[in-house]
Picture 1 (cartoon, rainbow, N blue to C red):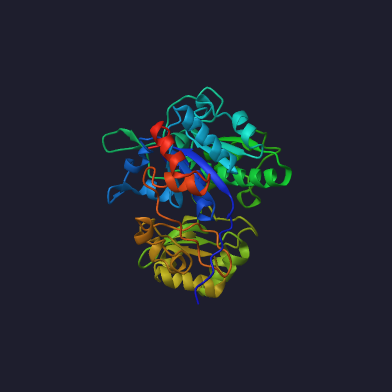
Picture 2: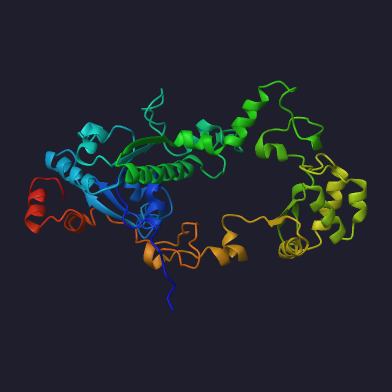
Length: 411
């Protein structure tokens, strides 16, 4: 029996005007079943040639962020093209402007103009630095938002030149997720009240919001130490914010195994005791019992040396099994290259197939209980669905489509 697949966003129609990575704002929505119509210029979105790898002539970025969408070419420099766009707005729930703000408005497609034909329309603009502020018109690419938000510190190469360190790019991932959440909230509101909404977000804002723990900790530390302290286990001394505060930890630290590395996380006293009992080293707990919560035994080199020898005695898989059996938090340390070999990955994350999508891709990670994940369609070629969308969504006949093509509104 074939597993059922629910399209949770069936009946939600999104008209998207996007360039490059910000198109990811609708990727998850398409994965969940929304109809996403990507409106492109006659030249198309050059994301198809942008970045690496290039898979059979098409970029992986395009294959991923535009999967499950349909492409329509409309020349918004023409009056008939603008009218055609407004016809799509009439039949849509959402218009997404995934580029520098104001591009649609300059073509006569302001939010007010769209509301005139569809009062329930939701418009969301996602851009680099947003629709206001001194950086509004500053050209940028994705890593700019991480740099602006303080996500990474420059590294120095062998020649003494500063460079970009390896890191997960936050702005280009967090921005689309925050945006999709806002879009869904606005659609729910519009369907309940008949009132649309105009949303805008900056990927730079999203980067700093995603990294809230560090920035809010620094902000808290601006207050006097009589008001804001560290943990009791650290004698209330202030640690560096977030992950930087883990430096020097011993009971919460990475250790080498026989064949790799594991992350040991016995910061609570009861976990620490379970561990020392299970490895038959109760004297370690007796000597260094620590505090009840949040105790990493920072700077205890003698204990770190003991734990180093203990962890070198088993494989990573053995330590994970040990953690499951003894209820001690231990994690394997994978890489982005090797994580797909991990049994947890293999159990939960089946690759979306390359023969459908053009490249192996990871699925939307939220599961519907008892159902298989929806496999979206392959990212479209430029204008691949122009005629089909005009017929199916707007009910245009061949003569009207031909007239639009003659007028230069479509290609």
